[in-house]
Length: 274
Length: 274
Image 1 (cartoon, each protein chain N blue to C red):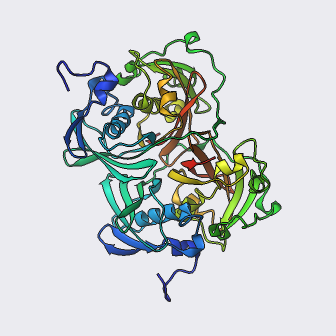
Image 2 (tube, helix red, strand yellow):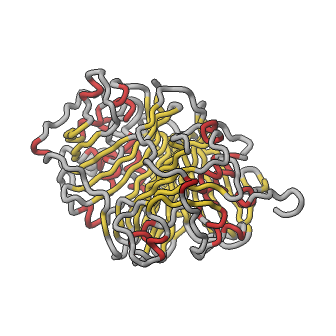
Image 3 (tube, each protein chain N blue to C red):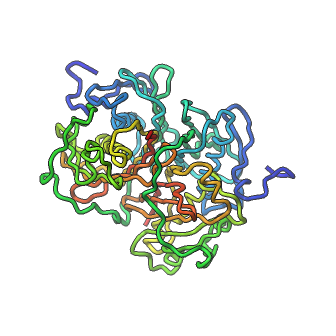
């Protein structure tokens, strides 16, 4: 989408979709989000979620999203088929498929839901960390362009463990992150942030290795008003791997608002070579 | 499936599927797995995985499975559409949909993969717990029939916290589990065990409440030989919730072999009322 109506923020550009038929939308990759191969996977996830959010029959807010990265997304246009598989009174189940030409590049399922008040409790509070203002913004010299769209501030497990070739004895990275330029948090931006951690294999091995996400599941544990209440502030993310084995490893992340609200969890599997 | 060729073990009965067309199989619910409403969700997950495993074009072992419980599964027959969405050299992406009549009851995606040797490490080892032989088998008086198919031995967070109405101050349950009668572990049995923990809302609130899984993602972190090596021995599972809010809560589980091998992680979202 270009011209006077094009959105100005890179995130909004990434998720801009035009309706081309019933249950079918079209978008295109945005250079500002380029990764090693194709676009940053977080924007692919955010774009698939946006296809659900703007669907005329959508009912409720995002509750869960599972993305399967079936193949590389090439630079240029893509189409997303998005259709409700079942609509219940309080939730709705979605099927999605992103295609380029005759290739399926991404499959996904999503659930949207109406939330009601119940007993509420958070067991997994944020770790005790310095404020983002007391930390140095991470450099963007990581060989991928998409990181320039974020202000990341590493608390532990930062890129220096990869850059200095030593590797870390454990796989946890904790960091503050926000969009740059600033953009109020919503489900779309939060979705991309859920995939913004560099691969745990890099951290353990002390070097970038061929690696890529094959599947990613996000559970939105906060309501839309809690997400909106974060405004343009930093979000705290912490991620670790449980196991590296047989050229795959997992990654398990939690993301909190600065106010301690647990916004989402994200679990993924990555292939890697070593 | 009945008659002389019917499988004798309840798990094999649950996942028995006959081919009815290309990419279409038929099965039926098994009374021995009855839950409060419909069959135990673990058998639904195992049955969907079995549809992939027995597909003639299947390539590699199960790597990931996401199940979305779109509506109740009624007693009786169901059909599963199962088709490869994309086949790559080292992995394969699957679409699945379980239907009864004109209703979609479950959707799923799965990934199968060929595993190669790489650097290997487990960060998340099992907790220090007593051997199953030193623990009492849990009673099966929980009002649902499916629990009779398991020998569960609670280490922490057992059913007594629900039964006595007190509730637990935190949501962790750790337990040993194996099929009864004994059955060698495979991906199908492991999948069902990933959903065998009672809802965390029951544990925190100290009473059964209306609750049900809406989405479940399993990551198989072990290779097929490691899973087979467990034989008929107990598996150790530990589960907890990160947050209860707005009538949904998550559940995050890890399952290890007695030898300490991390076999799988399982993450789900449940609706609940309170």
